[in-house]
Each structure stands twice: as structure tokens, then as C-alpha cells.
Image 1 (cartoon, rainbow, N blue to C red):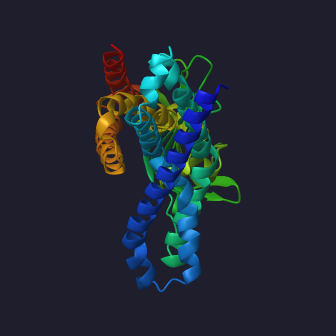
Image 2: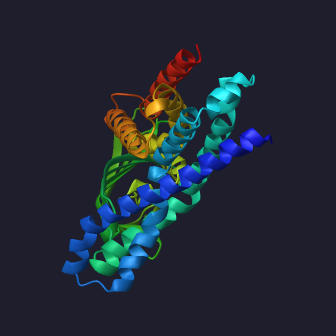
Length: 360
């Protein structure tokens, strides 16, 4: 590593870490005043104050890290240009491309760090913070989500369930279609309610209809009480996550979305959040690209107030566009992949255009 690169990176890291500390502090202050009413209303002990915000810290760092990188790149290049160090570098034969490469490499490493934090630390910390606020402070328990109109296959049988009620360990409106190897209906079992008792699904009252394999006509009809169903799935297989998706990482979201798709359920929201887990960390790299042309164009007027103002304005614009597109993804107006990556592509193309213009 050359002396110039070391000088660039040292300045960049110092400003970025300072900016990160400032943004995290502002975020914590705002969040504190937002949650203080809940703490006071439920008379929470002081220890829970510190525990809650300690668990919130990884998520806060994850959210403000792109803004800190934007300000770090902006202030680094702007300061170098204002002090004529950038001019001296270019006069010495160092191209703008070689000057910004160390910053881009550093931003790429921060992108990897961002993804690692989101994948392994943020879900656990968000879960713990929500648990403290919901359970230890408010005394509430997260309910399981009800699911309706469910189709799936279990072994050679096809199931249709009108409503799954995990809280009461029951399935309402169950129909079982048993087919032969030629997919001809052999038997149909209907039950108004099925309960999960001692690892077995038992129908209070079931109707069994058997059909002729050749003609498909109804042969017999029989009502049976306390019928054990051949369903192999456990109750936990019908539990759908009803909490905050921030508590799930990319791997968990992918597994959950695939599972819901296989069971014939709408997995759009989970797919959007899954792709967002990959797209969001790249905001660190995108912010670095965005900061470069702005720093070069406003190099003579660089100051701390301008850096903060620019970071906030660009960050708000990025967040608004990203939130709008993700909402369109949730509504299935845009494909999940397009909804989550479009903001990055838009800002990257815009910044590359400005960089090329500044280089000319």
C-alpha cells in the first residue's frame, strides 16, 4: 500500500467512524424519546432501558452505516480538494480513478461487513429488543398467525384446510383427497374440526366417502367419530411467522418463502424481504459512488454542515425511493427482485454519470 493510499484510507476511516458515532447517537436519542412513554407507563426498571437500546444498537448501525460512508467519502475527497492535495496528486500523474479506488475498496469491505451484521447479528438483537419491549415491559406474548385456504400434499394425499388456528392446535374445515397411482379419486375424508392431540391429528366427527375407481361414482358414505387422520405434519409445520421480518435473516427468509410456495401460499412479502437482505448492504457501496461527484463539484465549499446536509438529503431520497419500490413489491405490482434492486441501480447509474462528467 502506497503512502497516498494509506493517507486516503486513514482519513476516510477516521471521518466515517466519527460520522457513524454521530448518526448512531442522534438515532438513539430520537428512539429514546419515542419509547420513553412505554417505559414510564409500564414502570420498567432502569436496567431494561440499557438492555433494550443495547440490543437495538446493531440494527441502528446497520441502518446508518451507508450514510456514514457517504459522509466519509464526501468529506475525505472534499477536504483533500480544498487543501489542494487532490490537485497535487493529479498533477503528479495520479488519475482520479486511482485516487478513488482505495475508497471504493473500503466501501466494498463495509458492504461485506454490513451483510454479515444483517445476517448474523441484527436478527438476534432485534428479536431480543422486541422481546424486552413486548414481554418484559408490556407483558404481552406474540400470537401465532392464522392461515386460511391452505392446499398441500402429504405423502399420496392432497389436503385442503379452510383455517389453521395454532393457538388452539386445531384445523377447521379439513378435506382429504386420497388418489391412486393414476390420480383417480379413491376416497375423500371431510371433517369440520381436527385437533392435534398427543402428536396425532384427530377429527371429532368425520365423513368418509369412497368412490368407484372406474366410474368415479360414490359407492359408500360413512360418519366416524374421533378418527385419526393420516396427516404426518406436526402442529409446528402450520406455524407461520407473525412477528417482525427484521428478526429473520436471508437464509431463514429463503427457506420460509420456499416452504410457503410449496404449500400454495403467497410468499411475495417474504421474497421481497429476502432479496432486500442482499440489496440493502450494497447501499454502502452505492453511497460511496454517489459522494464522489458531489465532493468534486463542491470541493471549494466543503464543510461539516454541508456534509451532514448532503448525507441527510441523499439518504432521505434513497430511503423514500427504496420504500416506495419495496411497497410496490409487497403489492406484487413489481417483481421482488426488481423492487429491491432498482434503487441501487438508479443511484449507481446516476453517480457513474456524474463521476464521468467530473473526470472529463
